[in-house]
Image (tube, rainbow, N blue to C red; front, side, top):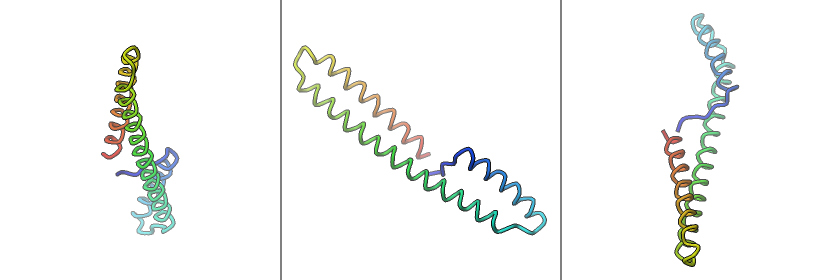
Amino acid sequence: MKPSYTRAEKREQAWLLLRGSRQAVADAVDPRIEARLDAIGERGRERALREAAALLWRLEAAKDAAADARAAERTAPRAERSQARRAVKETQKRVERVQQEVDRYRR
């Protein structure tokens, strides 16, 4: 799973890399630059883990809602069955959307 950086972190990371590469040419790299780059990377990895956990939680919630909708469809009176089918289709679409986002995030 790749790290998730904010715009500010990406900007700072690019600036630090540029500054570090200039110093590397002169063979005098400041260890504080490497420490800041490591800190940004660690924050990005932590954020990626939290986002992945939140996506998985949303996927489980969507699956639970789909199961509830299916149960409601099975137990619905004949007059309400078409409305219950629509609810099942909507919840299944929601599960598919969240699953696609989880798959996209894992790449």
